[in-house]
Length: 179
Image 1 (spheres, rainbow, N blue to C red):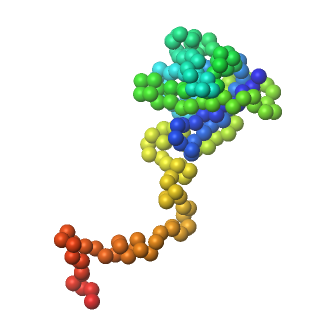
Image 2: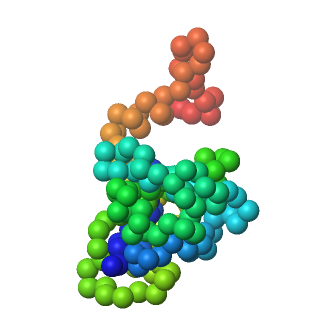
Image 3: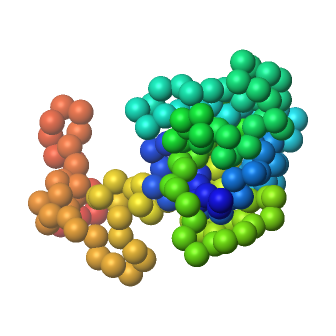
């Protein structure tokens, strides 16, 4: 069976990745593909926290056995059969850096895949760019959403208020050169 999974960042609309993953693929193989595609650091401890549809923890899988097995022993299909509806994938456990992985069901029209995830859709830069201050258009406040060349919506009253400057004592400031 081939599953469709969506990788997202909490609170960020400008990023996602969609993968088609063979059910027999281990969480370790999924980790290696995500680390490669999303440019995660290679020298960090990792963990998959499996959640059911209500958000309750189903299992935790890491490089070491955290009680549910290790990532190289658990396939995606096995985690789903255990009740996992989504994962929080910690790519840097120490600094609590993670992405969300939602299992969206079977991939339509995909019959057989190799034992590694295949990237099907992509949007936005890698997560490190969001840490460095990148803001996607979708994530901007409504007041800042306009394309280059579009006129901004503002009132003429706002313009008048900016032109009239006042000194600290409340008196208007005039330029001696103005008449």
